[in-house]
Image 1: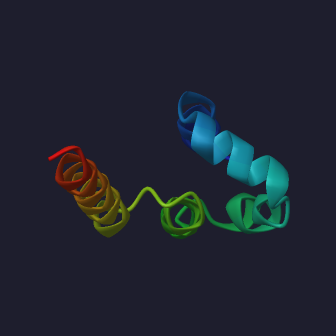
Image 2: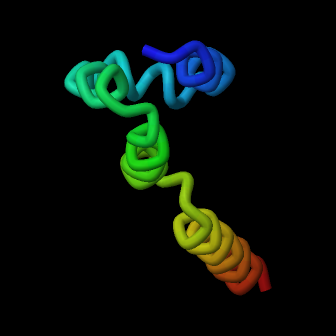
Length: 73
Protein backbone atom coordinates (compact mmCIF):
# COMPACT_ATOMS: atom_id res chain seq x y z
CA UNK A 1 0.00 0.00 0.00
CA UNK A 2 1.26 3.47 -0.81
CA UNK A 3 2.52 5.69 1.99
CA UNK A 4 0.06 8.51 1.23
CA UNK A 5 -2.86 6.07 1.45
CA UNK A 6 -1.62 4.79 4.82
CA UNK A 7 -1.29 8.36 6.11
CA UNK A 8 -4.80 9.26 4.91
CA UNK A 9 -6.23 6.24 6.72
CA UNK A 10 -4.33 6.94 9.93
CA UNK A 11 -5.47 10.57 9.98
CA UNK A 12 -9.15 9.70 9.61
CA UNK A 13 -10.45 7.54 12.49
CA UNK A 14 -13.66 6.73 10.61
CA UNK A 15 -11.70 5.40 7.62
CA UNK A 16 -9.51 3.36 9.93
CA UNK A 17 -12.53 1.85 11.67
CA UNK A 18 -14.26 1.16 8.36
CA UNK A 19 -11.14 -0.55 6.99
CA UNK A 20 -10.96 -2.78 10.07
CA UNK A 21 -14.62 -3.74 9.66
CA UNK A 22 -14.31 -4.29 5.90
CA UNK A 23 -10.88 -5.79 5.41
CA UNK A 24 -11.54 -6.66 1.75
CA UNK A 25 -10.59 -3.03 1.00
CA UNK A 26 -6.94 -3.84 1.70
CA UNK A 27 -6.82 -5.78 -1.59
CA UNK A 28 -8.21 -2.90 -3.59
CA UNK A 29 -5.99 -0.32 -1.93
CA UNK A 30 -2.88 -2.42 -2.51
CA UNK A 31 -3.70 -2.74 -6.20
CA UNK A 32 -4.67 0.87 -6.84
CA UNK A 33 -4.57 3.85 -4.50
CA UNK A 34 -7.46 5.52 -6.35
CA UNK A 35 -9.86 3.21 -4.53
CA UNK A 36 -9.46 5.35 -1.40
CA UNK A 37 -12.05 7.73 -2.86
CA UNK A 38 -14.58 4.94 -3.35
CA UNK A 39 -13.88 3.56 0.12
CA UNK A 40 -14.36 7.03 1.61
CA UNK A 41 -17.73 7.39 -0.15
CA UNK A 42 -18.92 4.02 1.16
CA UNK A 43 -17.71 4.84 4.66
CA UNK A 44 -19.65 8.11 4.63
CA UNK A 45 -22.79 6.31 3.48
CA UNK A 46 -22.45 3.62 6.15
CA UNK A 47 -21.77 6.03 9.01
CA UNK A 48 -24.26 8.58 7.65
CA UNK A 49 -21.72 11.38 7.24
CA UNK A 50 -22.90 12.65 3.88
CA UNK A 51 -24.24 16.18 3.59
CA UNK A 52 -27.79 14.92 3.00
CA UNK A 53 -27.61 12.82 6.17
CA UNK A 54 -26.38 15.82 8.14
CA UNK A 55 -29.20 18.00 6.80
CA UNK A 56 -31.74 15.31 7.62
CA UNK A 57 -30.38 15.08 11.17
CA UNK A 58 -30.65 18.86 11.60
CA UNK A 59 -34.19 18.78 10.25
CA UNK A 60 -35.15 16.00 12.66
CA UNK A 61 -33.68 17.91 15.59
CA UNK A 62 -35.55 21.07 14.62
CA UNK A 63 -38.78 19.10 14.34
CA UNK A 64 -38.19 17.59 17.77
CA UNK A 65 -37.59 21.00 19.34
CA UNK A 66 -40.66 22.39 17.60
CA UNK A 67 -42.82 19.56 18.93
CA UNK A 68 -41.46 20.04 22.44
CA UNK A 69 -42.27 23.75 22.30
CA UNK A 70 -45.81 22.97 21.16
CA UNK A 71 -46.23 20.65 24.14
CA UNK A 72 -44.98 23.28 26.56
CA UNK A 73 -47.46 25.89 25.35
